[in-house]
Image (cartoon, rainbow, N blue to C red; front, side, top):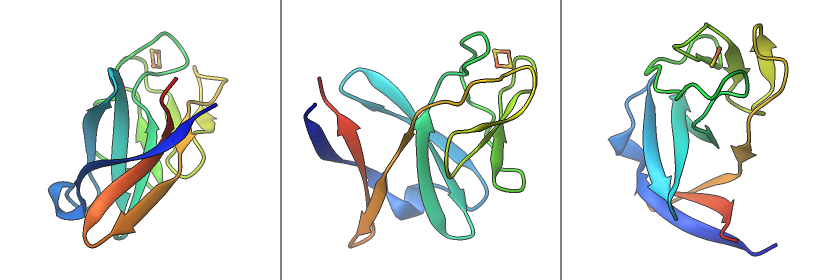
Length: 106
Ligand code: FES
């Protein structure tokens, strides 16, 4: 597995308490900013493939707009039904105000 670090945006491009979807190598990734920290998750829900463009972070979680499942932004773990499986989460590094994520490019 070839894990690569990719610069996806500026940290300031993501508003506090909000999410932003970026594309990396044809794959959409959800960025979420909470209390100044940035987290990266798969952009599609594990329940029925809903696009996770909910926009807001609630208590360290994001909500799928389709049926209301919630996921922990730190781990991708499902925290509310109807999702029972988590979604991908990616390591994030902030360097000189830029957001880098660690992704498998294969
Ligand atoms: S597709 Fe996300 S909760 Fe159903």
